[in-house]
Length: 168
Image (tube, rainbow, N blue to C red; front, side, top):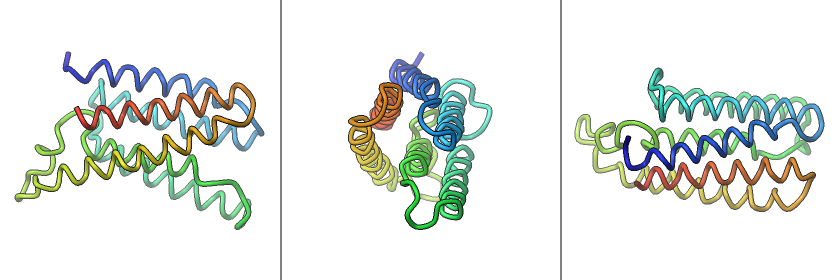
């Protein structure tokens, strides 16, 4: 077991808790939160433990899901509809997976053709995005039902732990 595995396990536990609490709020929010939480949890589980699909593929899937989510929300609700919290969470998780939060170190993953020097920059970008998402989660956890607050707390915790894993 690697030194960062306890952090991965804690991040997965937070993500599972968030997925369980995704069934709060209006029906559209429940579906959206459920799909986003499940997708992020599966990506984290595979990247940390199972290693079936490459983390960069998961990152691509998460970014594509964020684009689809944003586009459908825009069509459904127009300019005044919802926020970008779920889509942003998908993008942040994609960035953390791409920077090597699970699996091979980013230096190894990016060292092909001399690009290894960019790994610290990518790690920093992933951590900065994570800090922003954790702050947004903290803001959102101040309102709503207790289940919604738990959901946002768990999502923020999972993102923070993934950022820690990037730095380990």
